[in-house]
Amino acid sequence: MKTRIVALLALLSMPVVLVSCGSMGLVSKVGEAIEVEKKVEVLAKYRGLENKTVAVVVNAERSVLYEYPTVVPNVAGNIAAGIKEHVSGVQVLDWRESLAWCYRTPSWTTLPLGTMAEELGVDRVIFVDIFEFRLNPPGNRWIWEGMAGANVGVIERDSLDPDAFAEEYSIAVKFPDMKDLSRESASEEKIQLGLVAKFTQTINKLFYDHIEDKYPNKRLKG
Image (cartoon, rainbow, N blue to C red; front, side, top):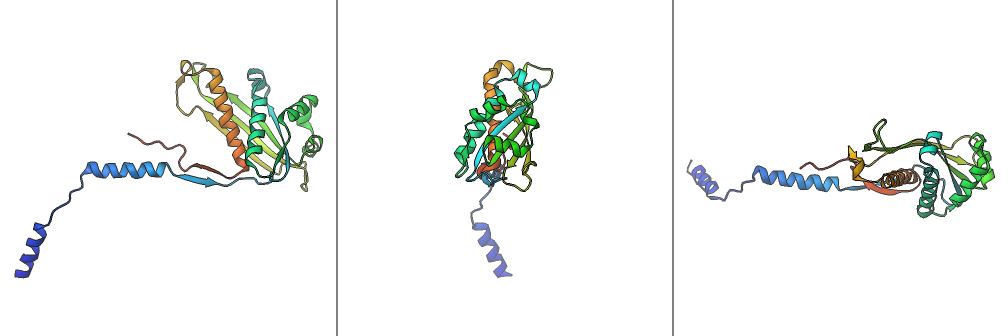
């Protein structure tokens, strides 16, 4: 019994470290911030452009062409530049040549896919078919809420079936990320440029390894 009393007195004489709820909350916030900032490597979904000749062709709905006549050349140019910059050994046909071919061939979208590659003189064709491009929500021009969507197909001239897409992807992006951004907050030109940039970057990343945020949509709460 005497031994127990001595041990108890020794424990009582030791300094006590208290961790407040506030300190625990701070540690939690720091840990959450570190986790949110983490990056991850995302592998290319399609590697068949490496060391190949490539052309980019872009089609869009008539309503898109009418309301945003610069979208097709801007999308084609951005994708061609991105592939040229990031894909190893690739040779990209000047997007202006691809666009000129489309203008010279009014029915190009109805051609067999393999014929497109042959006429463009390349190994691969990236076919971007834009089905949606808008800067505002339907019926409300006072709010910026951009949306772009497309089906992206890869044509392989040397495949067993060149008239079928070797790979197909569906892409949809929004810009800006914030909700209910009023028309007075930004110009139409800036919103359109931002949407095109995000849209084409998303398409380009199909074709090369890259680093992304682990939690791209997560935001720390105060």
